[in-house]
Image (cartoon, rainbow over all chains, first blue to last red; front, side, top):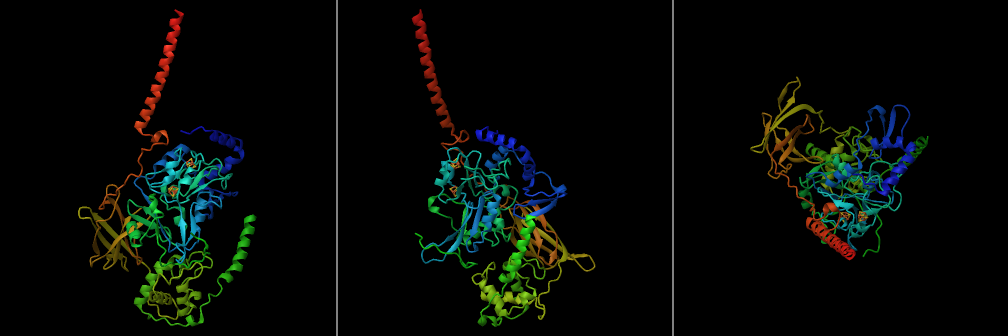
Length: 305
Length: 293
Ligand code: SF4
Ligand code: SF4
């Protein structure tokens, strides 16, 4: 059920006009995120983790890309029986920002846009400062989805809050409603807009991004579908992130690959959620920054209220 | 061409940066010659090994294999000369305080244990007698089955002796885990008896899929080279509860989400209005026809 909006029409027109130049690049792009090609049998590819690898051309098979509407239907349903949760151990974070980098690569974000942000925190004047990564909290009672007039942002049954950028009209009501400032707006043409022109929109990764619409942390829903941990969780070198299914009461650490009981982890460490007084029921749990592995090296902002 | 230049630049930069970053990690003079208070014996070295595996291996890699993480500066292998050239006091200071990419372990590992860690590092010093000898892993195999009625896993473990025959593996720890979304959750461990057998009772609290099926994984420790046994879909767990998060009734959104009563009242009201308009038009036509007659 591909909607024939004006935007679609214009996009198709653009794609046809620029076809000669785009076709070659696009077919490789949709199969394997290629950036550079080389003559001969070897081909250079950029992996999702940002490494440049060389593979034999004969080993490549074109990836199956579901079409737009199929993508959107399955994206709305979520993974059956799952209930994804994230646990962030504040005592381990040393502001390495690898999670932010991996996230920006995955979601094609401009350098100033962040789905996840590592903040320098100090709770009161004389308390110890610490670093706090903050993604979208994937609230179980999300204010953002309720204000969207066109049902572009929605919650799925596995707990993830997603955005359909094909549907979003850019009204930014959701930005106003989110108490965690988790959403970013594409004011400008997104990063690599040229490169990803004509690639089928993937609702579970919000790529390619689209000017005039919203983006935010998606728990890497596309990677979860492939049985992989979210990009940030896999990228952290310091064991900050745990991720897993609350229904089966298990979370796995992205660095050490250790799997533990979720309920025990949050009970033993007195985990908390952000701004619980708002009743948004976040899905991201924080373990307090006790016994920190790294000294705080940031600069403290003097005037905190 | 460009990448070549870039690579060259990176190379030059690394060359310049490396000595700078690897520059002697200054240990205060009073710390340098502190002696290790814990004695160099098998027990301490073993404890040190456990600590190493938990806290250090992820960056420094396996001892002697030079498979450390590619960080800058590179974390040295613990068997290397660079590492062994440190004094005990120096190692202790570095582990305690950390620097750059290396965490401070002051807050997470007790002082005693930090000294034990140093005992483990010294196990690889050529001047020391090696207390912990890493024998190559022995070939072994595990057979396991699930008794669903009693919720027990029955295990038989064997190892290959020198002549290539399989013998019962006595007194070896066997690990039993449940497969979860991204890894295996350790349920517990059991020791094999003198016949190489052991029985493990699955805890009541284990959660399976919607029907209570758990995929159980049985493994031996790193001293044995054995394929892990995966027992698919054993009905030994609690059924997983899958609470519904979404209620479809929302007042204002798109047609898919509209409530039936709202849709019917809207259609009813709109229909009534059209009927009224139609009625008026019908009456007007009627009046016109009458006036003609
Ligand atoms: S954190 Fe903000 S954007 Fe994320 S679900 Fe909650 S309200 Fe919505
Ligand atoms: S900006 Fe987009 S997602 Fe947000 S409320 Fe408006 S239409 Fe919905």
